[in-house]
Image 1: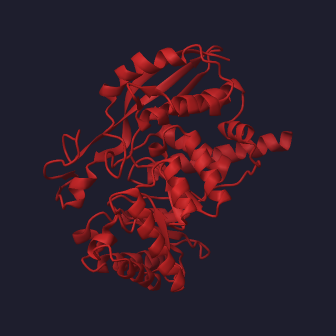
Image 2 (image 1 turned 30 degrees about the horizontal axis):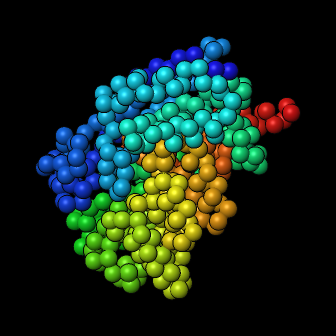
Amino acid sequence: MKIKDVIFSEGKTGFFFDDQKAIKKGASQDGFIYIGKPEIQGFEAIRQAGESISVIILLEDGQIAVGDCAAVQYSGAGGRDPLFLANKYIPFLEKNIKPLLIGENLKSFKDLSRKIDNLIIDGNKIHTALRYGLSQAILDAISKAYHETIVETIWREYNLPKIIKKVPIFGQSGDERYTNVDKMILKEADVLPHGLINNVETKLGKNGELLKEYISWIVNRIKKIRIHSNYNPTIHIDVYGTIGIIFDNNIEKIADYLASLEKYSESFQLYIEGPVDLGEKNRQIEYLSKIKERLENNGSKVKIVADEWCNTFEDIIEFTDAKACHMVQIKTPDLGSVHNIIESVIYCKNNGMEAYQGGTCNETDVSARICTNIGVAVQSDRLLAKPGMGFDEGFAIVKNEMERIINILKYKDIRR
């Protein structure tokens, strides 16, 4: 089966691009927007609409495959590629990528995905968002060419065990960190609430007191409104390096503060994502490793998750080999072509690292569904409900896709 033609269409994502640097410097909010001048190159405002590009592949037999190019909410920060704007990159795709794809034989997803990932144009790899969307469309096209599900394509090409099992879904609250927790509890999200603790003054507290209060509130809320008494979700909170800020990156103080949170989470397992942001990868690995070591030596059950500066497949290997954390976030758009997601999860699971297959609120329904298929195929330890920050929409997309694919696979397994 060959690619007959390729179409590109501009779209919007499930959320917005935010200038993380300006926000960390204390940009104030006015309603939904942030006040002040942007700090990161390419931004016209601290918060602006997220953009995507759909890659539509037309197959010889008339079938249509789709993937969506998208970038994370905090584009241009933490060592990531620049701000992703559709009107800039559609002409680039038409000129440089479309001629390469037309006539391509759809035999191997791994080979074609790696070809896109390693493509050099004008001396550089193409933007991670482009590699992300192009490889999604290729994965979808390969599965259609072989008349199988995306999960089966991944099983076949990676020779993986055929495990038909749901993956825990992690809900993200956005700034509605109270109302959305109620929604997560009622819908029994496996992991909650993300929390978006990205500001010291209003969300963490100068001494971390606001986060303690928030965790205690979450625990009490679960106990109060859960419908089933056996619903005991994992608590996972992203703090965007702000704990490091209040303790001047003092390892002992950070670790001791993290350990103190266990009292507030009670019997619920607690994960803290991104406790520090040291501004570059090697120092990030060093500090997270020492924080983890101190936590474990003190008998704390609190677990830390790496995010910033753990962007690529190679980064994930380094964090995993250094045992720098308990879990890495595989931030899907940051990895470029989606074979890197597959291989990252496999590497983590083979080397004793928990693999959280994340991403961003700033994706689309298409990328979320394809990531869900990947998560089921490789049995990620955690899968982000995306896109959007309203919880319900992203949770419905991921949950329903997972239920569909599980039931399709069970049906096919019975009929074999």
